Length: 270
Image 1 (cartoon, rainbow, N blue to C red):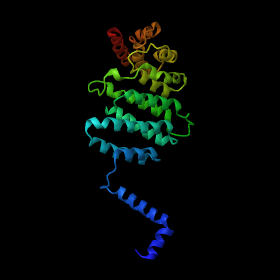
Image 2: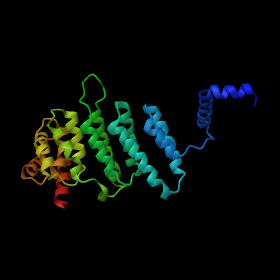
Image 3: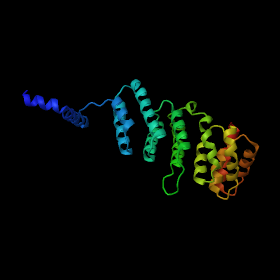
Image 4: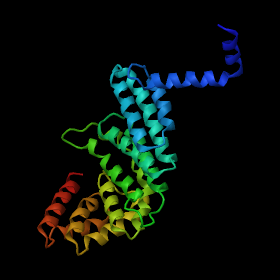
Protein backbone atom coordinates (compact mmCIF):
# COMPACT_ATOMS: atom_id res chain seq x y z
CA UNK A 1 0.00 0.00 0.00
CA UNK A 2 1.37 3.41 -0.92
CA UNK A 3 2.18 6.16 1.54
CA UNK A 4 -0.65 8.26 0.14
CA UNK A 5 -3.12 5.44 0.76
CA UNK A 6 -1.89 5.05 4.33
CA UNK A 7 -2.33 8.76 4.90
CA UNK A 8 -5.87 8.63 3.53
CA UNK A 9 -6.91 5.84 5.90
CA UNK A 10 -5.31 7.53 8.88
CA UNK A 11 -6.81 10.92 8.14
CA UNK A 12 -10.25 9.68 7.12
CA UNK A 13 -11.12 6.65 9.30
CA UNK A 14 -14.78 7.63 9.49
CA UNK A 15 -15.06 7.61 5.70
CA UNK A 16 -13.85 4.01 5.57
CA UNK A 17 -16.21 2.96 8.37
CA UNK A 18 -19.15 4.60 6.64
CA UNK A 19 -18.28 2.81 3.41
CA UNK A 20 -18.18 -0.55 5.17
CA UNK A 21 -21.55 0.10 6.82
CA UNK A 22 -23.01 0.94 3.42
CA UNK A 23 -21.73 -2.33 1.98
CA UNK A 24 -23.18 -4.29 4.90
CA UNK A 25 -26.57 -2.63 4.48
CA UNK A 26 -26.58 -3.51 0.78
CA UNK A 27 -25.82 -7.16 1.52
CA UNK A 28 -28.56 -7.28 4.13
CA UNK A 29 -31.07 -6.19 1.53
CA UNK A 30 -30.11 -9.08 -0.72
CA UNK A 31 -32.11 -12.27 -0.36
CA UNK A 32 -29.04 -14.44 0.16
CA UNK A 33 -27.95 -12.57 3.29
CA UNK A 34 -28.99 -14.79 6.24
CA UNK A 35 -30.99 -12.68 8.68
CA UNK A 36 -31.77 -14.49 11.92
CA UNK A 37 -35.06 -14.34 13.78
CA UNK A 38 -33.28 -12.60 16.64
CA UNK A 39 -32.14 -9.85 14.27
CA UNK A 40 -35.67 -9.47 12.92
CA UNK A 41 -37.05 -9.15 16.44
CA UNK A 42 -34.56 -6.37 17.12
CA UNK A 43 -35.62 -4.68 13.89
CA UNK A 44 -39.26 -5.10 14.89
CA UNK A 45 -38.64 -3.20 18.11
CA UNK A 46 -37.37 -0.23 16.11
CA UNK A 47 -39.93 -0.04 13.28
CA UNK A 48 -41.78 3.25 12.99
CA UNK A 49 -44.45 2.61 10.35
CA UNK A 50 -47.26 0.04 10.07
CA UNK A 51 -45.97 -1.12 6.68
CA UNK A 52 -42.49 -1.74 8.04
CA UNK A 53 -43.96 -3.55 11.04
CA UNK A 54 -46.00 -5.89 8.85
CA UNK A 55 -43.09 -6.60 6.53
CA UNK A 56 -40.85 -7.47 9.46
CA UNK A 57 -43.46 -9.71 11.08
CA UNK A 58 -44.00 -11.52 7.78
CA UNK A 59 -40.27 -12.15 7.45
CA UNK A 60 -40.09 -13.44 11.01
CA UNK A 61 -43.09 -15.68 10.41
CA UNK A 62 -41.48 -17.10 7.30
CA UNK A 63 -38.37 -18.06 9.28
CA UNK A 64 -40.41 -19.44 12.17
CA UNK A 65 -42.24 -21.90 9.94
CA UNK A 66 -38.89 -23.34 8.87
CA UNK A 67 -37.90 -24.15 12.45
CA UNK A 68 -38.73 -27.42 14.20
CA UNK A 69 -42.01 -27.14 16.09
CA UNK A 70 -40.29 -27.39 19.47
CA UNK A 71 -38.10 -24.38 18.67
CA UNK A 72 -40.91 -22.16 17.43
CA UNK A 73 -42.54 -21.54 20.80
CA UNK A 74 -39.89 -19.38 22.43
CA UNK A 75 -39.32 -17.23 19.34
CA UNK A 76 -43.05 -16.78 18.79
CA UNK A 77 -43.48 -15.69 22.40
CA UNK A 78 -40.74 -13.11 21.90
CA UNK A 79 -42.54 -11.93 18.77
CA UNK A 80 -45.76 -11.57 20.77
CA UNK A 81 -43.90 -9.65 23.48
CA UNK A 82 -42.49 -7.14 20.99
CA UNK A 83 -45.90 -6.62 19.37
CA UNK A 84 -47.52 -6.19 22.79
CA UNK A 85 -44.96 -3.52 23.59
CA UNK A 86 -45.93 -1.65 20.43
CA UNK A 87 -49.61 -1.90 21.39
CA UNK A 88 -49.14 -0.63 24.93
CA UNK A 89 -46.31 1.83 24.46
CA UNK A 90 -46.51 2.93 20.84
CA UNK A 91 -46.79 6.66 20.25
CA UNK A 92 -48.74 6.37 16.98
CA UNK A 93 -52.31 5.09 16.82
CA UNK A 94 -51.73 3.40 13.46
CA UNK A 95 -48.75 1.47 14.85
CA UNK A 96 -50.66 0.38 17.95
CA UNK A 97 -53.57 -0.91 15.91
CA UNK A 98 -51.35 -2.68 13.37
CA UNK A 99 -49.53 -4.53 16.16
CA UNK A 100 -52.82 -5.35 17.88
CA UNK A 101 -54.16 -6.76 14.64
CA UNK A 102 -51.25 -9.18 14.48
CA UNK A 103 -51.87 -10.32 18.06
CA UNK A 104 -55.51 -11.00 17.21
CA UNK A 105 -54.45 -12.96 14.12
CA UNK A 106 -52.05 -15.12 16.12
CA UNK A 107 -54.84 -16.02 18.56
CA UNK A 108 -57.29 -16.78 15.77
CA UNK A 109 -54.71 -19.03 14.11
CA UNK A 110 -54.07 -20.87 17.38
CA UNK A 111 -50.42 -19.84 17.36
CA UNK A 112 -50.29 -18.46 20.90
CA UNK A 113 -49.68 -20.85 23.77
CA UNK A 114 -51.35 -18.55 26.31
CA UNK A 115 -54.17 -16.65 24.57
CA UNK A 116 -55.16 -15.08 27.89
CA UNK A 117 -52.06 -12.89 27.62
CA UNK A 118 -53.38 -11.39 24.38
CA UNK A 119 -56.75 -10.69 25.98
CA UNK A 120 -54.97 -8.89 28.83
CA UNK A 121 -52.98 -6.79 26.37
CA UNK A 122 -56.06 -5.81 24.36
CA UNK A 123 -58.14 -5.03 27.45
CA UNK A 124 -55.32 -2.86 28.78
CA UNK A 125 -55.00 -1.11 25.43
CA UNK A 126 -58.76 -0.48 25.40
CA UNK A 127 -58.64 1.25 28.76
CA UNK A 128 -55.58 3.31 27.80
CA UNK A 129 -56.92 4.34 24.40
CA UNK A 130 -57.36 8.11 24.09
CA UNK A 131 -60.91 9.37 23.93
CA UNK A 132 -62.19 10.00 20.43
CA UNK A 133 -62.31 13.65 19.41
CA UNK A 134 -65.14 12.86 16.96
CA UNK A 135 -63.07 14.32 14.10
CA UNK A 136 -61.53 10.98 13.18
CA UNK A 137 -63.34 8.11 11.52
CA UNK A 138 -61.28 5.71 13.64
CA UNK A 139 -62.32 5.10 17.25
CA UNK A 140 -59.34 3.28 18.71
CA UNK A 141 -61.19 2.03 21.77
CA UNK A 142 -63.96 0.45 19.73
CA UNK A 143 -61.43 -1.15 17.38
CA UNK A 144 -59.83 -2.88 20.37
CA UNK A 145 -63.24 -4.01 21.64
CA UNK A 146 -63.96 -5.56 18.26
CA UNK A 147 -60.59 -7.33 18.32
CA UNK A 148 -61.28 -8.71 21.80
CA UNK A 149 -64.57 -10.16 20.60
CA UNK A 150 -62.90 -11.69 17.56
CA UNK A 151 -60.30 -13.37 19.79
CA UNK A 152 -63.08 -15.63 21.09
CA UNK A 153 -63.55 -17.20 17.66
CA UNK A 154 -60.92 -19.97 18.05
CA UNK A 155 -62.71 -21.20 21.20
CA UNK A 156 -65.89 -22.03 19.31
CA UNK A 157 -67.09 -25.22 17.70
CA UNK A 158 -66.93 -26.93 15.30
CA UNK A 159 -63.18 -26.36 14.90
CA UNK A 160 -61.84 -24.80 18.10
CA UNK A 161 -58.11 -24.10 18.28
CA UNK A 162 -58.24 -23.82 22.07
CA UNK A 163 -60.12 -25.48 24.89
CA UNK A 164 -62.22 -23.40 27.26
CA UNK A 165 -59.73 -24.25 30.00
CA UNK A 166 -57.32 -21.63 28.63
CA UNK A 167 -60.00 -18.95 28.31
CA UNK A 168 -59.09 -16.01 30.56
CA UNK A 169 -61.00 -15.69 33.80
CA UNK A 170 -63.70 -13.08 34.26
CA UNK A 171 -61.28 -10.91 36.22
CA UNK A 172 -59.46 -10.08 32.99
CA UNK A 173 -62.61 -8.35 31.74
CA UNK A 174 -63.44 -6.41 34.91
CA UNK A 175 -61.81 -3.19 33.62
CA UNK A 176 -64.17 -3.10 30.63
CA UNK A 177 -67.39 -3.20 32.66
CA UNK A 178 -67.50 0.54 33.54
CA UNK A 179 -67.58 1.31 29.82
CA UNK A 180 -71.24 0.22 29.93
CA UNK A 181 -71.91 3.49 31.73
CA UNK A 182 -71.08 5.40 28.56
CA UNK A 183 -74.25 6.43 26.78
CA UNK A 184 -72.91 5.08 23.52
CA UNK A 185 -74.65 2.33 21.56
CA UNK A 186 -71.57 1.15 19.64
CA UNK A 187 -69.56 0.68 22.83
CA UNK A 188 -72.39 -1.07 24.67
CA UNK A 189 -73.05 -3.30 21.67
CA UNK A 190 -69.39 -4.36 21.52
CA UNK A 191 -69.39 -5.08 25.26
CA UNK A 192 -72.58 -7.14 24.99
CA UNK A 193 -70.80 -9.28 22.42
CA UNK A 194 -67.73 -9.74 24.62
CA UNK A 195 -69.53 -10.55 27.86
CA UNK A 196 -71.88 -12.86 26.00
CA UNK A 197 -68.87 -15.12 25.37
CA UNK A 198 -68.16 -15.66 29.07
CA UNK A 199 -69.65 -18.77 30.69
CA UNK A 200 -71.11 -16.92 33.70
CA UNK A 201 -71.75 -13.30 34.60
CA UNK A 202 -72.39 -13.30 38.34
CA UNK A 203 -69.33 -11.26 39.34
CA UNK A 204 -70.37 -8.13 41.22
CA UNK A 205 -67.68 -6.12 39.41
CA UNK A 206 -69.40 -6.93 36.12
CA UNK A 207 -73.06 -6.95 37.16
CA UNK A 208 -72.89 -3.48 38.68
CA UNK A 209 -72.52 -2.05 35.19
CA UNK A 210 -73.90 -4.78 32.94
CA UNK A 211 -77.23 -5.64 34.58
CA UNK A 212 -78.86 -2.18 34.30
CA UNK A 213 -77.97 -2.00 30.61
CA UNK A 214 -79.13 -5.58 29.97
CA UNK A 215 -82.52 -4.90 31.58
CA UNK A 216 -82.84 -1.67 29.62
CA UNK A 217 -82.09 -3.48 26.36
CA UNK A 218 -84.65 -6.18 27.17
CA UNK A 219 -87.33 -3.46 27.14
CA UNK A 220 -85.93 -1.45 24.23
CA UNK A 221 -88.07 -0.60 21.21
CA UNK A 222 -85.37 -1.95 18.91
CA UNK A 223 -85.99 -5.71 18.48
CA UNK A 224 -82.33 -6.28 17.59
CA UNK A 225 -81.27 -5.10 21.03
CA UNK A 226 -83.86 -7.34 22.67
CA UNK A 227 -82.69 -10.29 20.59
CA UNK A 228 -79.01 -9.76 21.37
CA UNK A 229 -79.44 -9.30 25.10
CA UNK A 230 -81.24 -12.62 25.60
CA UNK A 231 -77.96 -14.52 25.73
CA UNK A 232 -76.58 -12.11 28.32
CA UNK A 233 -79.64 -12.49 30.55
CA UNK A 234 -79.30 -16.27 30.41
CA UNK A 235 -75.81 -16.02 31.91
CA UNK A 236 -76.91 -13.87 34.86
CA UNK A 237 -78.18 -15.73 37.89
CA UNK A 238 -80.36 -12.88 39.13
CA UNK A 239 -84.15 -12.88 39.50
CA UNK A 240 -84.56 -9.66 37.52
CA UNK A 241 -82.51 -11.06 34.64
CA UNK A 242 -84.46 -14.32 34.53
CA UNK A 243 -87.77 -12.48 34.61
CA UNK A 244 -86.65 -10.33 31.69
CA UNK A 245 -85.59 -13.44 29.78
CA UNK A 246 -88.97 -15.02 30.44
CA UNK A 247 -90.74 -11.95 29.04
CA UNK A 248 -88.62 -12.06 25.89
CA UNK A 249 -89.82 -15.61 25.21
CA UNK A 250 -93.26 -14.15 24.47
CA UNK A 251 -91.95 -11.08 22.63
CA UNK A 252 -93.90 -9.75 19.65
CA UNK A 253 -90.89 -10.25 17.38
CA UNK A 254 -90.32 -13.87 16.25
CA UNK A 255 -86.53 -13.51 16.13
CA UNK A 256 -86.49 -12.20 19.69
CA UNK A 257 -88.68 -15.09 20.86
CA UNK A 258 -86.44 -17.64 19.17
CA UNK A 259 -83.29 -16.12 20.66
CA UNK A 260 -84.83 -15.98 24.13
CA UNK A 261 -86.03 -19.59 24.01
CA UNK A 262 -82.62 -20.75 22.85
CA UNK A 263 -80.98 -18.80 25.68
CA UNK A 264 -83.47 -20.22 28.18
CA UNK A 265 -82.39 -23.68 27.07
CA UNK A 266 -78.86 -22.77 28.12
CA UNK A 267 -80.16 -21.88 31.59
CA UNK A 268 -81.87 -25.27 31.95
CA UNK A 269 -78.72 -27.13 30.88
CA UNK A 270 -76.61 -25.13 33.32
